[in-house]
Every structure is written in structure tokens, then in C-alpha cells.
Length: 120
Image 1: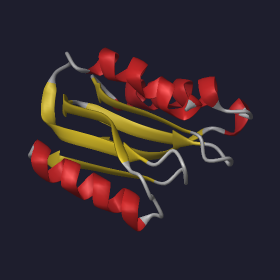
Image 2 (image 1 turned 180 degrees about the horizontal axis):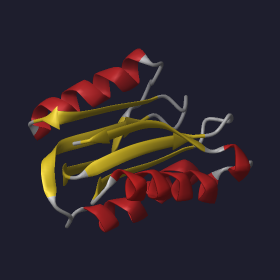
Image 3 (image 1 turned 90 degrees about the horizontal axis):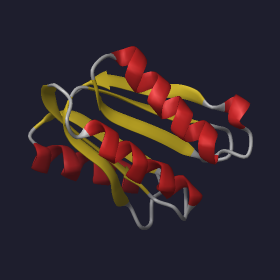
């Protein structure tokens, strides 16, 4: 549950930033699997992100974030904690916000690093 809490906070931060294209991130709390997709209409990115989560071992993939705006990033640690952002106004901001989310919920915050980044 701790991994999921950071995403509700981030979602509220990113819904009102400049538009590029739709993004979606799905996460499975039981297995720490996740999937993300961007750059297509919302229905399609949600479908793709969920399928990536399932393909990565997710057994109960739920949407964590979706946005129609900006840059995004996913940060992870070595224990399965992830932090995510989407809708940032630039890549540095997206990276920083995803790292902050990962570090907030990680048992080893110094091990969080940006694994994926995109402009949606």
C-alpha cells in the first residue's frame, strides 16, 4: 500500500500542466510489476500500459497515473518500490518528482533511480 500512496499525491500535481500527448501507468502492488505507455490516445495508452504490467508479472494491475500532459518518468529501487510522474513541464521536473516519490516510500531511498522517461 505504501507504494500506491505516492501516486495519488503525484496525480493531483500533474493534471493541469501543458499538453503533449496522453500517458498512463499501471502497477501491481502484489508483484511490484508495472507498465507504462504514452504518445497515443488515452484509451490506447491505458490498454497498452495494463498489458505491459501483466506481461511483467502483474496479477492485479491497477492504474496509478494517467494524464494528457507533458513529460513523465518512472523511478525504481532494488526492492520493488516505484515512483512515477506524468504531466511535468520538462524532463528534469518529471525525473525529480518520480525520484521524490520513490524515495518517500522506499526502505532504501538512496537506491532510487530514474529507469524510464518520456515526453507524452
